[in-house]
Length: 454
Image (cartoon, rainbow, N blue to C red):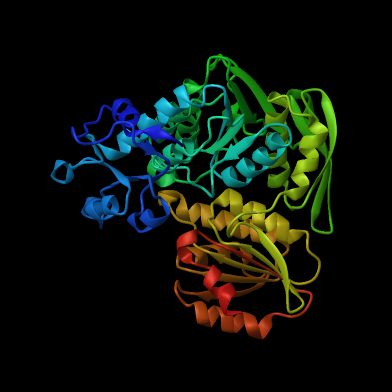
């Protein structure tokens, strides 16, 4: 990013003082005042949070050689751009930047109830095999994170993969207007945020507002195994469906078959719009086959050689606390503590099922499910039974419901939220060489603290 303060003020309809040099170059944008020292020449976006109003740090940040984007006129001074709303201004600036600086960049937007980050990472690898590619760092997929990600994208980027997240009505439309994707990927429709949105049908409708903001020749890449996403006449854009169910192969442009799991890796054949490629993936679970299909489809749409794209997927690694699989003291740990929904729980348990030896599932509360919480936690219990787990350890109040279908089919232990040491003590007593233990819960449950105590 290299924009003059005058360009920024014009793009967001902001005000600057007469003494502010319009030609001063802004090289980055940030929202944490503590990062001012490493953002010399950058612009601090002062946000008003629930607990802290960042405007109180504007003077300090400017004193360190930075600029500021503010909405409170009490802090209006030299080297500051004053706007009506800082978040809205960030989005307007990103929209302008996307139009003016990234007009030649192929933008791929990824959304869905689960799997967004892994899919985004795989797409960046596959497309990056042929094009200079940028991607969202981590999961900066919010009303603030997405605009900053766009502004950090270099103008000479040939393809950019952006993750779009939402939890309430209207969010997807706002994000999509900023990104203006050429390709939009919807990984699935699940129950995440159903507390706010009310039904899977509403979640689907909200996700699909991304289609309204596609570029004129844009393409929708969709989960062909999700009936809610089958809408032959609703959207005029080109639609490409991906499937991992062999019975559906004839009805989808892209599909996987001959899927095998061996030694912690996936092997399968992928047919992508008539072209076949052999795929090896350093990951487990049918959900990752889906993610790879989306990645290969996007690569093909961007003109990248499929063999090179498939080869690039060999370097895929899960990020953060997502499905980290490793050996410890003779047993296997599947650490999947970033977040949890009924779909991601089922996916994680399907991975656990593939392991030999004794299986232990440590499962915590799934949050933001509203009135569906009891029903969906009980459904996870059914998935525990299908996984063949020998021991179930629940963590939290809602997670106790998971045990209902499991009673009589596995050993069951229950802990309250926050009882990290007690849960770790139990695991120290029962874990044996050859065991596999899965940890899965919503991020707020902090299940990783149990792992750290082992």
